[in-house]
Length: 210
Length: 332
Image 1 (cartoon, one colour):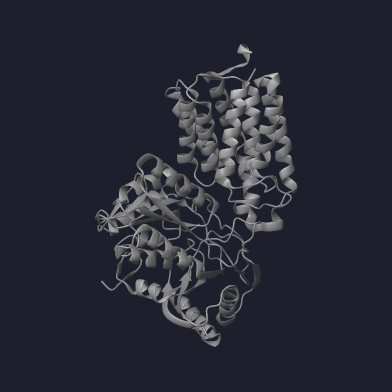
Image 2 (image 1 turned 180 degrees about the vertical axis):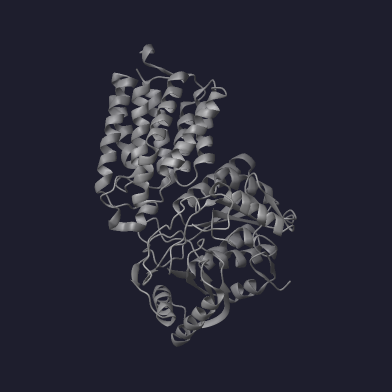
């Protein structure tokens, strides 16, 4: 399925779409975070993704690994807190798994996404059900893998749907990781801001693939 | 909000500029936001690097100097510094014997330091060991939380491990003593008022005039309970009891720190220490060394924290060793 590969410009469109979503919903993400965290997720993600796109405006790397190494390092150095290392690690591992290529087919994209997810698990040490971004990302990656035979665009759409469902399910959970965990039972009843931004990430991926 | 600042946006840069102006014996990298000793690390000496969000001064930058830290990375107010800062500092202070990272147990700090250690190790081969402090008994340590927060023991650890490094102990040895200090220390804090983060412009939490928060974190995180304001003797009991309930401090010497949160005058801290000491005496806890003052603060929060360390002879000897920093100075 040569026409179903994702080239560099498609991946950049994904990143731009993610930037747009965290920027438009900056206040909402911060509002979610102020309920159970430290009220900076919207500002941090908007600042980080703006820096990512500013850097890409100066020139887009020719290979997927260079592109995502740049994205990951920019996030790590501009976002701070826990989101910087988590999203930074996701993109760094994504790029390393994709390698020095200039396009990805559906299977390679799925492999890179899973490598990124495994990086998030290793970095944050969160498990499913801890009320974190893992609860949106895990189902998304599984859905992508299951849908990979139908092509990248269809798999990404399935991943976006699964991410949104996982995100919504975090509301009922009690936080076991991060600053929200200090609240214990009081964290239940609130949507997790990291799961929200992760849902934006997969929504942006689906929209970037025609 | 009434603060001695120019603007919330320039608070950190202006603070670092002030530290540089006041302490010509230090080298302040304003771009990377790292405070270094004026002289490079002595060849063969283990370097100790710490860092964290700003707003806890003198921790950590005030503890850079002979007998304590080699460098400290400053993050934004209450926000972890980033791996690139830490990596730059790690490479700069390494003198061939490796670098100990001292990290307080907060999710962001732990992850950022972890990435810095990976980056430094991958790119340069510098040997990095890490100790994570988690002494706050207010938080239940279980699988269901991010673990106990790192608070007051960090000050005692930086002093004791710093002295070990100054004596020429190898990295594994410095890391071992640091781990021992953390394992034998417990802390508990309380607040009379909230702090106000400059960028937020308003108090982090609401606390009525007739109430206090017991078990507060150094960023204004919720504590164990909110109770009516009480006399100092009763407050002392609310700090001492949970600390002693968590670890047996009898049968040997201890080092005790009564720390101010930033907004309480020194006379109140001494008054509190007096009350704490009476209770420790009554419980058979022997106080060999004491430290009273503002050492790990929470901006302008009024309140205090108690840290007790079950000290070995080795720890006491290293505690007494010379130290020459902006925040702690003796024996020099």
